Image (cartoon, rainbow, N blue to C red; front, side, top):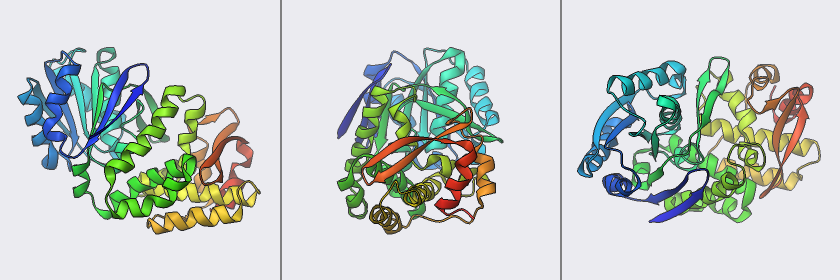
Length: 352
């Protein structure tokens, strides 16, 4: 078992190990006086893991109510969040109770946002079942829902009481879902750790998921503790996301988040190299590593199509967009770019 402590406005542990679902109640009971738990899960995850988690919670004295929601980014909406809030209200949950999010990043974001706003805030526990959620959405307190106009346009920060990452859950992920998780892991290596970046394909082949998740979470912990509310260095974690979110939206959510981030990293590295900000050898290494993980490095969308989504990016401030630019593997920086120049960056990145 590996534990990463995060000292944010609410301190909590991210616990990473196999077999945690069956031990969840015992791990959570010392952390809360709550007697009830609303277990929120996606319709694909529920049949696999909800029974185990519900049983473990009930064994430790929690009365559990189950809420199943549709899976997929297309359902990360105010409507779905409203269904969760109505469920909490109909079942007379109070702010002293828990919301337990079981599943991937969409479930974590939706349940997290609902926990943050229900009666002005109740306890939240994140139980990620995908590699992507384990290294990204479940850690750091960001919650959000999408609008038709853009991704993550409504949200707030809600640090959980705990994050329980059962690496056994990764055994039911298909190859594409695992690749999407590895894209976020590659992002961490490209940002901070050259050795980890190049070791990632071997670590993935050997299924050393506890080590992979722990290293990624530790790097994210360092930024969250310095910049919990995403106004400074934490914005580095947006590497690949501005272009990636534009790809997701342009595809109407047919491109999954991890693949979009991978393509976004390739595009921003390509654009940086075109401007002399990233050496050609470093660009080649980035593209080769993403290819080794079977992740996309190209896009068929035009700059105009992507720009429409980029103009609504939540990282935009006035007429300026903050991009995360790789100088080399393990060394990236924040760069303010006039929105008027964004189309040029997209074209240099490979957009038509």
